[in-house]
Length: 193
Image (tube, rainbow, N blue to C red; front, side, top):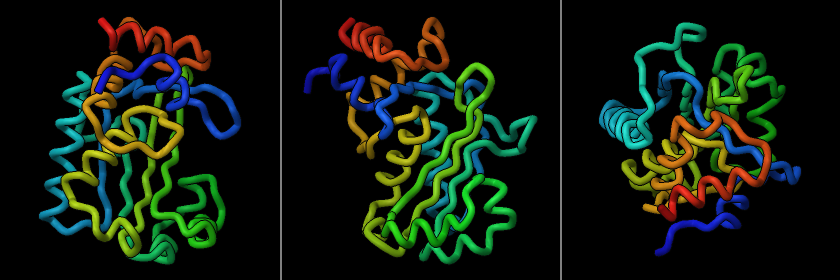
């Protein structure tokens, strides 16, 4: 398939409210994963390290401000999130388990940003009791890693085009965050080069 063009890229970063936001991590990624068996845990750790290495972005053991800044929560039912200490304070969203249950969601992703607009933290919640139960661990790990690398607006599925886009977005010449749709032109130019 040909590389994404500017219109494709703009659509990937246009949020539900119509605003454009393409942000990457502004600090090393320090992952922590809850709710997985050891064999799956190793698959996800490897996918995170490989994915961010491809983007030329560091992965660290800890974040100096929060310990971990990429938090993945795996549950069999959204009600299990009720056992996460201070979940409301962590997410800023009261009654998150009830909201996700009402929406019949399979997953939910939440970003926090630093003063420059770069990603400071990402929390992903995945309900393995629904449609994701059939997902192959390595494919799911790759998808979760890609979804946490940039502020994609729609659901994405791994592809060579997305991997190339992520690598282009991590070009140190580009800003860590952009809110103008013209940024899609800059990314498209890098993909076409």
